[in-house]
Image (cartoon, rainbow, N blue to C red; front, side, top):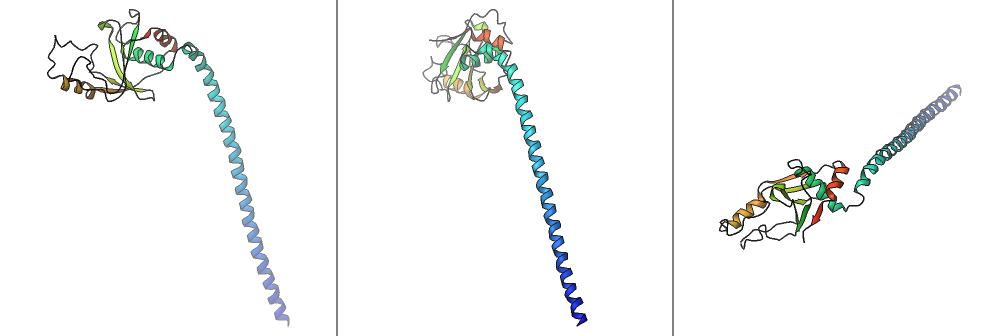
Length: 203
């Protein structure tokens, strides 16, 4: 009978071995959990820091924004476009006003021409009171960028002064060629505010 006993003991031992190895597995699990917990906390800290950073930068932009508080987003856009595209070429001081004409989609590119092509989107024309002051015709993409129609003149020549027989081709070319997408930078708000004051709507 001695042999049997030792065999039984042996069984018990082997079963207790498997238990301890299972416990070991559990231990590794808990340590993994601990790691993820710590990671979560440090993530939150990072998030808080991010929020604080953005608040600080927010305050400085607020000060700058106050210049533009009295203007509609539309006027601010016109002023920024004019500042970036025209005022770099022409001196601002000489310009009393910037005139805005909203041109709906489907309007003739050259209103004087029977056979003119039509705009395929809503566009805006900004112009100085005099030709020398320049003009810009563009459409807005709503994301800070605009499409500038570089081939649209300050004013189309009248039918008396130019050949209108090819005007369909000329106007189509004017809205298809030389259209440039430009990102409008948020320039110095003080200057933009001065310009926004000069924006007038054409009747």
